[in-house]
Structures are given as structure tokens and as C-alpha cells.
Image (cartoon, rainbow, N blue to C red):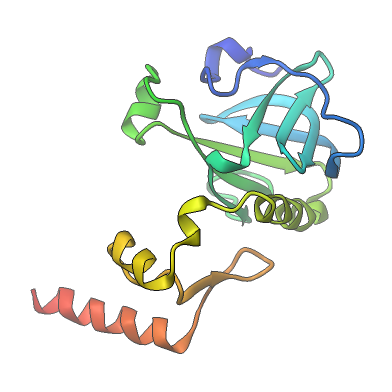
Length: 187
């Protein structure tokens, strides 16, 4: 039996959901289990649209996630963290969240979406990536020098993810990481 929404969902996610506008879907996956704060929320449809992401159960309870507040998403095959292959998402919570766990994680919300068919995980990841491309972060429009200075790391142009969600780094990035780890060891 799924946990009631009020028992585990933050105000960011809990609501009576409406179906996305027709024609706006990049991908729809039936029979997806959603998990938040370690609790299964049930099975519903996962809509990846041009505007946002939505997970909606048959009773129309669900949640919507705006791309601009989606911090990260990845394919997770770590069965120690979750028993099935899934898409892991880190979502920026609302200011003023009162819930203890979200305060500890800086107000961010972790969500996992696991399709019944595990071969669909990669399609979900790719469709979410496509949707995010439609909503670029305005801060990303800065030139690389400004972005590197703002990040404090200076490595944003050297790190990328492949279509499987695996971390890729160019030669310059690998050399920079090695240099930084050496500097840390010397301190």
C-alpha cells in the first residue's frame, strides 16, 4: 500500500494534479513507481513535457517539477540505494520548507522514478535531458571565464555527462583534478 502523500511529501510536490496539455509531451511512461524520502508513493504515469515533469497516479494525486528547479538527474543502477533501476532527481525545494530532512539537505528534494520496464530508464533520462535543453539556466549564458570564477571550481567546461548519465572529463579536466588533489594532500 503506498504511503499517503501527506505523510511524506513536501509542499513542493503534494497536490491534486492535472494532466499535461495535449501535444506537449516529449515522453510518457506508464507504470512508474515514485519514491520520496524512502517512501514509495505508488504507481502512476510519468509525463516528460516541454514545460515540466509530472508524475500522476490514477487518483490524480501527484507532483510537478519545473525544469528551472531541477538541479540534477541521473540514471541510478545502485541497488543498495534503491532496489530497481531508476531516474534519480535532485530538486530545489521552496524557501521556508519546515520539514527537518529537507532543512538538513539545504531544502533540496530527492525523488526516484522507476519504470516497470527497466529498459525504459535510459529513455526517461534522455527525454528529461531534452526537456532541460528547452529551459537553459540564464546563469549559464555567462562566458566560460565568468562561469568558472563564479563556480569557485573553474571546471564547468571540462566536465560533461554522456547519454547514460556517466561522468566524462576531458584531458584538461583530469589534469586539473590531479593537480587539486595533489594540492590538498600537501595541505
